Length: 511
Image (cartoon, rainbow, N blue to C red; front, side):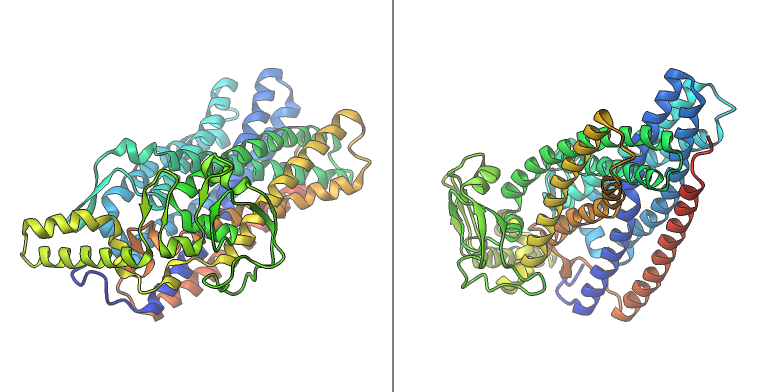
């Protein structure tokens, strides 16, 4: 980091981002199903423990088999994802490794070993341990996976809102000042809640989809009805919890990442009493002219709702993209500097740090560094276009995620109504919709992460370190080569998993 991160090949940045995005997307195909099925199989085995019926034992074993297949694939992609921080993002790892590494280390030493231990008991201990101990192992496997998600999401939340740390110019590293501030920040708690409940929705959708497929095929109908009831109840409850957590997430984004919110809403010029946009004509493939357009064409919005979501006040001030670039005054009277001022102060911080590292450890340099360190990352920003995330992708990803979330609540509620009022095997359209929930849940889940990660661009760490200052000093060719190798490997793994899962589903529960 001796050159203060200023000489980076842009192709390395692009390929490193592409490789990490590829790994994260594939990893997130497996993780939410793991978390969701952990809850489903725990409930199924609890029924077996309470009733002693062989039916529930076989049902639990069926969902556990599907869990195990998916669990193995998630572990494989997750390990590669963590290694990429060191290989492709070494400047990032050096700059904030003291903070970022702590939750990942805890995740590996505690949560991962916990779930790995009890998953063995869960699969191989049916005839070797008591029913109660086996039930505890099943729940502890799911709890271990959830704790693992907690620490990973703590790390991600810190990247979105860096707290509990202080920069040390002598070591050129950010050092943790409060572990609990990092681990229990509102952003971390909310991200965990929103992510895990959405994973439960996906697991429930998978359970409902598989059950509906059996009903369509007129196979294992008793198993399908009972699994469908469990899946629909879990899905409805989890969908409502996800919606509540999503509301809080939007509020936190407004407080700490206003540019992300502006991109999500395609809000070019903000103000008081801002409306929540339902739909608008926003091109998802090109950046709009946000400096000249007042609002996207064909906009349909609900008056004042965005202000309420962002500030808890229907007349609260919400800044747009232009306001953030030009500077604005918050409702509490504080002034947010313009992008140009932040860039200037960021460059002052970089210059002071360079002078400090060269031996000029004067009081003036230290003061300049401390005063402007919060804008350090802006010193690497050249113009406004680098500081604005892709509006179209954020706008439509957010609406697709929310729209599908509303659909899930409706479908789960209808399924439960039909289950309790009439024969679920007759309305075949509803069964086909149930099967369609599986791919739709994956789309909603991935869209959520698109908003989370695209929305904070260009920042690896919000306001602290842009992506082009975080990469390793590698050749773009080597990163591109590994990108295509991973693409082939992950696609093959996904194909294998789908094949094995389909075979197990076709085989059905061994009742």
